[in-house]
Image (tube, rainbow, N blue to C red; front, side):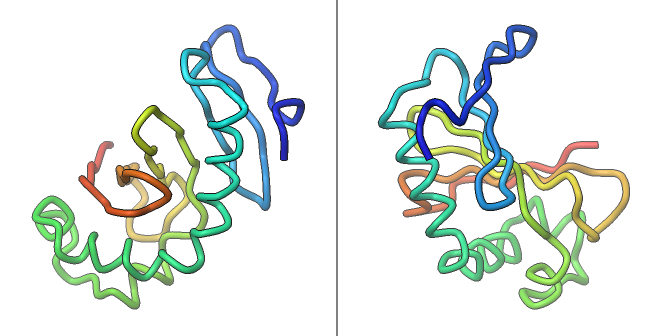
Length: 124
């Protein structure tokens, strides 16, 4: 993947691409060859880190308050692929098409190439 795979969206002021079925968003201010390489690294690492992400969700107070019945296994089965939003520190996964409920977006912020997860946000 390289910069040419991205299309600029002036309305959103970000670059958009799809890679390995992931939708990727990079704000105009952060777009660089390094951020493109970073996005590819995150997508490549995702299958190896998704269990850690599910454990982080399960242990998150925010996630527990909304979905106390979910287990790590049910989270893994219901999340599906997220949108990857790249920023200066790492990024955020936004789960729009999950099966946990029909009303909310689930955002999970991370640093580095999924080195650590920092927050869960549930919006609806």
